[in-house]
Length: 223
Image (cartoon, rainbow, N blue to C red):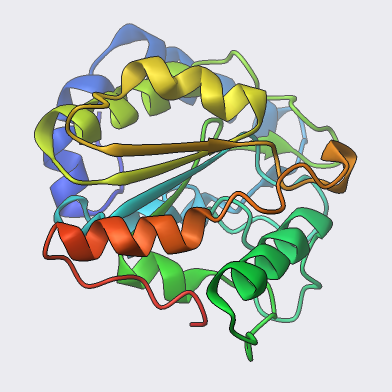
């Protein structure tokens, strides 16, 4: 099966694209479109996280759950929205924690996290598509099998990666990661529904301190 994805990822995930579950997933997406449903993100952006962060560039993984389901929001990066779209509440809380943790004032709060992705922050959602205005509508259709494999391959084939797992769903993926080879940071979800429990996790300073200890250039979270 020919999947349009960044070349390094295409090679690493080639076995996944040949599996029966992935064929069933592709058939499901085709049937959604054939039945007149709008799918987010647009087809060209489904693998945007992979496109912007090639395998050998990964320094950090931030795991989300489901793409945004409202028009114009989803563009294939967890927690991120395109330019011109107001930053969602969870992302606003992430920005607040960065400012408090690092003692900085972020000039860029437009919600587009492509600057992080290009520095090596892999912004992966566990489910890569959603039906418009219908949250979690593509849950348990095969995407979780695919992204679990992605997490395992990062854990197995790389070392010194920082994994940020926010909320119970993301934290459930901890078992897929070799904690002896990587830094796994866990906290409450940044959603306002978590009643502020995310604040004070200091993940961003911990991340950069660890990257420096590995001889890796830290992330400029203000970009």
